[in-house]
Length: 79
Image (cartoon, rainbow, N blue to C red):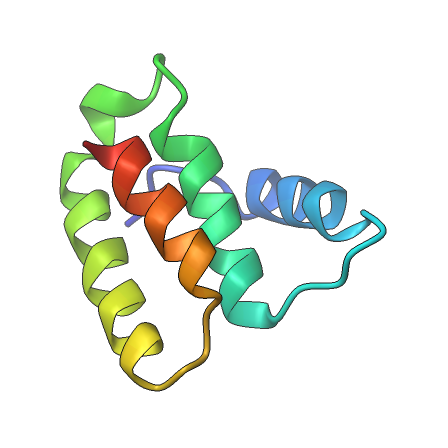
């Protein structure tokens, strides 16, 4: 949606994916989004993006592409 630059996404995804526990592409995508959504300086600009991210998350959950614990964290953070 043009609210975050590609460079910011790559930098954050690289940092998050460099941990000792590997994650799936979908888990990583939600983790990156979650970092933006919980950032107080970005919350007001990302309202529409939250809806789109939640829709993707639900689809991925039904397809068993994301960790259920990450879903809980994602939902708890948004609310």
